[in-house]
Image (cartoon, rainbow, N blue to C red):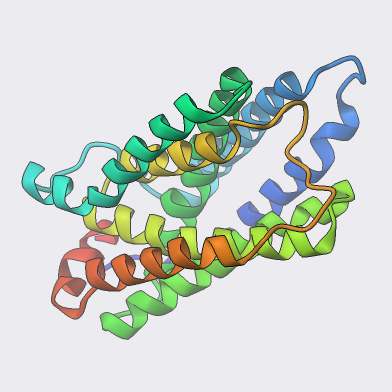
Length: 247
């Protein structure tokens, strides 16, 4: 029988992450550039997440998968496609800031996956059972993931762009949850998340804050695709295997 992770612990570690994201920048010297600020901020966040988990939450973090290689390859079909697309975008983007994009991809991929798919997802899953419970878990954590991206409002990003970012993070969260639950390894959602953010950040220079709105229509296709793939990966016949991640 799985041991439940208390809601208090799950909410506390999420709030701790939000506080680090919102508060760390205020403590950094103004002379630091964007990349330095982001790296230090993420290192602080990782330290907070791992410390709280080790001493208080005790949620096992799975990196080595026990899933057959054939299944991992099938589940990661979209990961392969996104990787090829990122390479194509990289080669076609003029003045691509590869260094900044890599830093953003690695930082977001590692830190956010440790928290959301590594701790919050299995911790929330421990409170539910059955196929409906699995989907309640995925939706709850994806909503939290989307809501977390609303912190850019505090950095004076326009509300239209922030809402689109939040929605994009929600649909991305659905797929990342499915990826983790089917592979039972954080490596794969970290990889997909990192590649996704790397591609999105290739044109970034100095900031990832949008001062204008983001078009929603170009994102509808990817959102529908991620939702459809998530529904397929987390179909009813896979429910029992999914719950093994918290047993």
